[in-house]
Image (cartoon, rainbow, N blue to C red; front, side):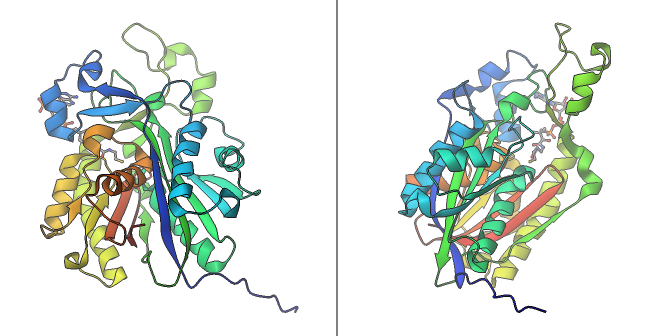
Length: 343
Ligand SMILES: CC(C)(COP(=O)(O)OP(=O)(O)OC[C@H]1O[C@@H](n2cnc3c(N)ncnc32)[C@H](O)[C@@H]1OP(=O)(O)O)[C@@H](O)C(=O)NCCC(=O)NCCS
């Protein structure tokens, strides 16, 4: 048996830079109320959302990603040609193949970086971060770009009271690279496929393409509805509140710290009541800064954590070197939590 030389990576990995892109169009709750029987007060009090961003025709998944990633690369202070891999987490890139990551890697000016998409719903950022850390430490890439990007407005049924107000568009990105100290803790992650039906696409693409119009969901004007994301709101809410606080605590334990050691908490921005409930269950001390970016960004799935991280750093609510707990959870159902040092 031939002796294979082992690959050589960095001792540890860290997030070196972060960037975000929010589409220019800001959509207030009033616009959502044109299609559903609800109120601004109900949406604010039940979800925390006041406005969200919807992408225009030019703000494609690739274009938003390039904007966010360009900022993350500049923030990391490296040249794009040193990026060895581009990992894009999205559920709203509409071409089955090729992956959008290759187009993004090319547009950013990387030197033929490895590039691929992953599908892990609202846990996508944590999944990408875990892969990136592995690549840097194992040595297959010196710097890895992790992008979470969504155009969920394309997959929202504006006549569905349970979801019309929830989703937004945007892109968030981080650069992960070598570190002398541990700066990304162990990931606590997993899936619960027995709950796969609680968040799903209304109609799979193949059925949408082949079924008779009369068999497909129709809007109030009688037109066939484009497939959208649907969810059992209460079931997801209960799961997030009860199970995800446990996962968050496990991530703190795995990193060998307590909530007293935390500076920042960046949960997936799904619902402000889920965030508040987790803060309570985890008994986070007063000094911990909590991301509540959902108010003006809505739920942007894989993009929500890096977008919230970028905003906290940009506004000075969090600072470089702070210790942050990040946790994503959503369709699958899937989840991923880890403790990181902020760039
Ligand atoms: C969607 C969500 C905000 C709905 O809130 P909720 O409190 O669970 O709402 P419910 O569906 O139980 O409905 C409660 C009441 O509000 C009404 N309601 C539902 N949608 C409404 C709307 N858009 N506007 C006004 N009233 C509404 C219902 O008809 C119901 O009325 P009733 O009590 O008279 O029957 C909430 O379930 C949620 O955030 N779930 C998790 C979402 C999430 O995180 N998804 C993504 C995971 S990544």
